[in-house]
Image (tube, rainbow, N blue to C red):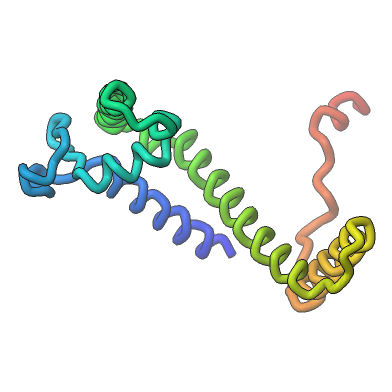
Length: 166
């Protein structure tokens, strides 16, 4: 479990690092919208990020210019953070790990919810929710039943509570 967690964390870090800095000349000059130090932003990357941003709600020359300035600022801050080694710090790595876990949990639960919803035949909202909750509970029970769970010791005590009892 721990090895898989570190492998996943390593993959997330590689994906993050590959998106934050590219080698000079990674894009042909004709394809680059802007180059910030050695990082080039391609037209496709710019368009994709622009459309996904709130700036893209109103596609005007002014909104594009504002987005470009915000993008430049963001890339400069990321480059600064990397130069300071912040991307290798324990706080950052723990943050990436938590983000990765939360994102994966959301994707897994969304997928399972859609699967369960597609199997429920009633149109009554309350009955659907009851059936969905039961199906999710059954699914969790099956996951636990098919897993090997070994507690090394009892539930850890609250250190603050232990101090008060002394």
